[in-house]
Image (cartoon, rainbow, N blue to C red):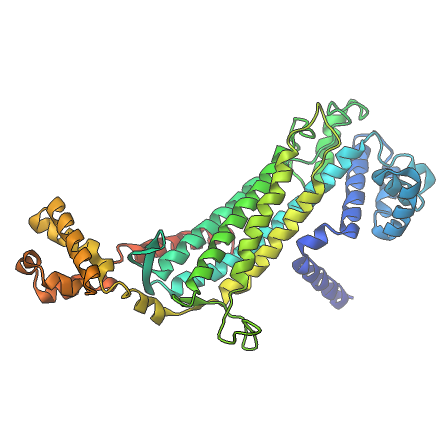
Length: 456
């Protein structure tokens, strides 16, 4: 018996681990949440003596979707043309007739469905946070593995100054952690958004103990104490949720865009692992087209557009109107997990061409170190003089197809103040990355401290 119980618990844990956002929004899961909400209401009312305890227990004993098939709901809906009433009518067929009189006692449809949606979003947030923590694990490793992988830092598409790839990835790492914190912040508001306030938000129809009933109902559902205001016609928390997903999509869109550029033939600094059998083009065998990065860019365009509709839902008439964005909230939630599921294997298996990164540092023939040479000379001949001089030297090098060293050695002012040996030291890009390595290490330490606080 004990073995059977252990196996059952393991099975339940696996089901929870395998749950997806898409499943959270499927019909059966939604119907089960609907029944859970009604049970939480009934048990709250029973605790306060509003309905009999036996009635609440009877309702709870039949709170399983086996007593409310979607096929039967669809047939009933054709008769009553009301989504919630159709479900109640089907469910009541399995409940003791006297107990059924207390089902959905004093409640209104919008309270039930909005609380169901809150539960769906709360479950979704749990999964999305877990997904971003997986991404964080990959980004931590990618940062650590490339602390001293020297590469070109680019601004406006041009070679600017040397950096390390670890420094670059550490910015993704820090941004991803901020997105985790954004999700947790909005979840704290979602958790307070369960609602039982009646048709116009004033608790009419719910009795003198309506406020206590609402609080108990949400406690039964595992939600926090509900907000005091009637937010039905406002829906700003749902808008904040959707806009938070938009921000996250832009984070991944930026990573996807950068990896697309880094994988360009001319750069070749990173490469997506597509497997040994992957075909880049049907007619051009040499191509290694990035796929994951492109998908991330697509999601970064799609998700904000869906979120705009949720944002528009903040404009409602009076206490409430018929406009709702539930379908958009479903779509934006599912799309966000799909996007993260593209990012996870991409970042976990990303190939970093360290040799190519180092080679590309030399593409400007040393000119990427112009700033360093300018600063060195500034201490000798003055900042403005050194700046003007180095602009002339850089221009001379470009016009004559010379390296910075070659051009510098042809300038008398430079040769009078710097030896060739010292010039070689100055023009070593690996010794001119500022605090890039320490910066990445600090971010790693910060993330580890936060993961420790998360018990990870």
